Length: 176
Image 1 (cartoon, rainbow, N blue to C red):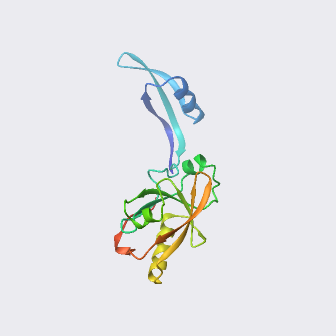
Image 2 (cartoon, one colour):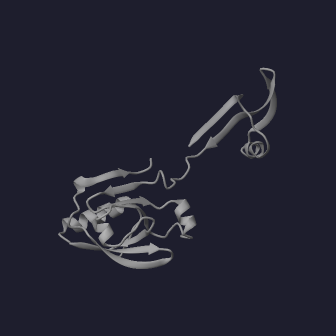
Image 3 (tube, rainbow, N blue to C red):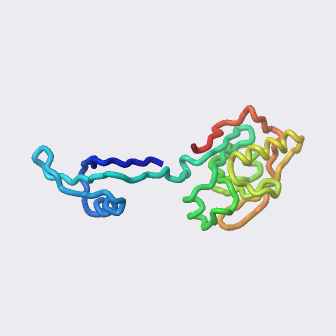
């Protein structure tokens, strides 16, 4: 979150009008006319306010990628939940990419599907999925059972994890 509080109002100028002007005023910024280099412009004064970090979107969401098992998954975001009419508490990760010829392809899991559970455990993040697959592989399991949501319908898929190696993990990141 970025906050500012100044006794002397600062002035930011730009060409604004109509809807932009109304939105700035709703944010508590006073919009006024100024003359700059002989041209009429609009400017807004600011003395205090705050700007918050936007929630992660599909481009900035945390993700996990492992090419050996052929997947890239991302955390669910507000826009995905809204588009699919899912609640904030509903589990799942978005399948962002599937490598051709991989165990994910064999399991018939496709991009834009939602994996809601792994071995009947609700998935809350890409990181959790990585940890559960690593645990299953380390225990010597051949497959894990995924619950997959696509177009409002749920199905099961068995994903082979014999090729999983944590050294092949890529793009493990989380928003700050």
